[in-house]
Figure 1: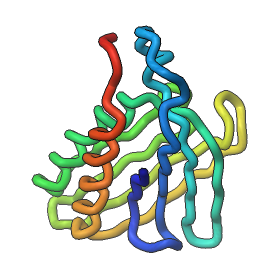
Figure 2 (figure 1 turned 90 degrees about the vertical axis):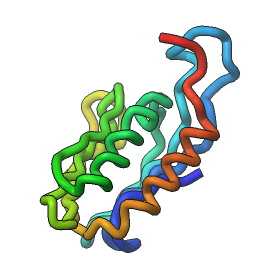
Figure 3 (figure 1 turned 135 degrees about the vertical axis):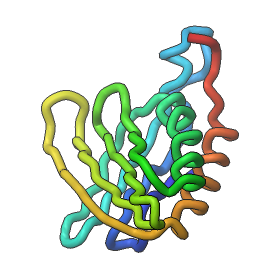
Figure 4 (figure 1 turned 90 degrees about the horizontal axis):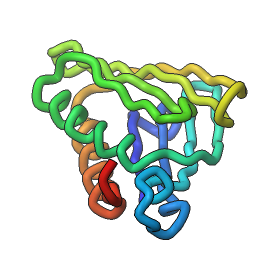
Length: 144
């Protein structure tokens, strides 16, 4: 399962969901960690690292992304509990979208890559579709 943001293979953030880290036990945080592989390619910089994100990271971002596509203005933010990946998408109201973020290859003090790209709104429906499928396949398990 893949969630991508960006324009081309040279200007893109990719998050591949491997699956839940463990079987459900009834403990919210243990039940909702997803194993992921993050791939970044921006200009001459490329990187790949493994991480664990919570299902809620994706579920809370989906309605924001849908709203950004409808209005084309404002700033939305994707962030993870351990801060390994954070990015914003900002719309100017005219169809231009700016992507800016930071990625760390490990939780805690680690190597940091800052990235930036811009594209038009025609790339958002694909991201929304991928994220909708991801959220359907990996629902939040249990209540917080």
